[in-house]
Structure formats: structure tokens, C-alpha cells
Length: 205
Figure 1 (cartoon, helix red, strand yellow):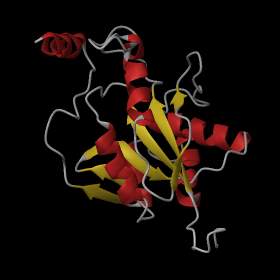
Figure 2 (cartoon, helix red, strand yellow):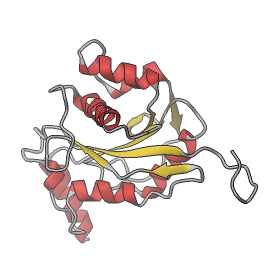
Figure 3 (spheres, rainbow, N blue to C red):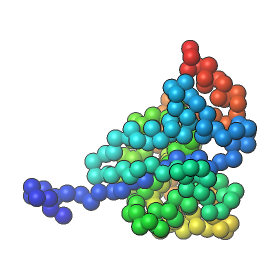
């Protein structure tokens, strides 16, 4: 393809950022997506903010973030208790229903407030060059997931109960590039009340 200036332009890859927020928050005892952080944002608002700040590399277009889960503005799982893969399958179905072209998902869990847009951009850069999932070390979330026929086949099978509904199993099926694990507390999960209290205490220090 040639641009009006005479230069060859590369096809744009369309990426949909996704916040996984459909969990039951059973260990937290309340909807953790609505917990307030010291910066005034809820966990859900923080996750969306992280994604909106990602600087897409050249040749990539970031779509508006989508949120999985049965909440206002969210996309409810079509199958109950299918875990993260149920959320991703519902997102994929939503994209297909509305005929929204999408080549890959950039996925973050709602309970990782220490993630940075820079780390997420690394996943995008690596994802441009491979046809596999991308994650950091043995941490399967956040991740880059190509939304091709192979990924969709597994997501549909997992939601139907015909495949193991785990991110690890999905990556084993589609293949996964594990980038070096960054230093720092970026992977901190807020699963329990004590996790939340500790983070809030550090935020005030």
C-alpha cells in the first residue's frame, strides 16, 4: 500500500485494551473494582487509565478500552464461573457482534494498580512481531493475546466447558513469549483486605 506522499505504509494493527473485572472478589469480601486508591481513582478507573496512557508503537491503533464483567458499562460473561477466559470470550463475542475489527487484546486484571503504561507498551511492541501471546516471565497477566482463529477456538471451547479454563492452558495452546520479568512491585495483586490496607498505607508514606 502506498500513501499519497509516495511512501509505502504498513497495515495498521488494531488492538483492544481489556480490563478483566468479572471476578467475584470473594477473598476481598466486596467488589474490589470499586475500591478507592490514594490517588482518588477506583481500581477499575486506575486500570482503564493505565491502558489509556499506553503509547501505541508505529503501525498500531489502540481502540477504546472494554471492561469485562456484569457491571454498568461492562460486558457480562456469557458463561458463569469460566474465569478470565469467560471474560475474554465475552469480549471477543462483543467485538464480533458489533463487527469491530480487532487483531489482538491487551489484557490487564482490575486488581493490579502498580502496572505502568510503559510495561504495557512493551507487551505491544513484542506482540507486533509474533503470532503468540506475550507476558512477563511466569506472570500470565497482564498479557498480549492475538485474536486469531486459534485463540478464538480455545476461548469458545473453554467457555463451553470443553477445554481447561485457565490462562496458562490458553497460552499452552496458542504459544507464549515470556519476556524478562521487570523489577519492582508492578505485579502486586489486591486480592484480600490486608493487601488493600498495605497498599493504602504505603501510598500515605
